[in-house]
Image (cartoon, rainbow, N blue to C red; front, side, top):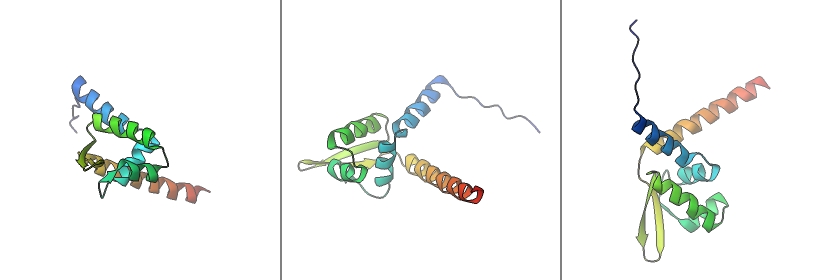
Length: 109
């Protein structure tokens, strides 16, 4: 078999790491999960995560900066949505991995 050469440049690596860091926190992953099917306001996301609106807003800002989310304003509310659908797929993969790990843990005990 011929070995396949794998190359990634520094700019690509930085983009990947930035994206991973954008969801690498329990609150940010909960936000991602909550937004998989609908756009939600800061107050709705705050209720879902159990974090204050201030903390939720900080996480939303990091996710927006990472290119994961975007928002739209309607009257005096700001609604967030997933801008890059690849993150929906990534969340599905992580959830599937988690379910499989739980099944394995139950079999082991």
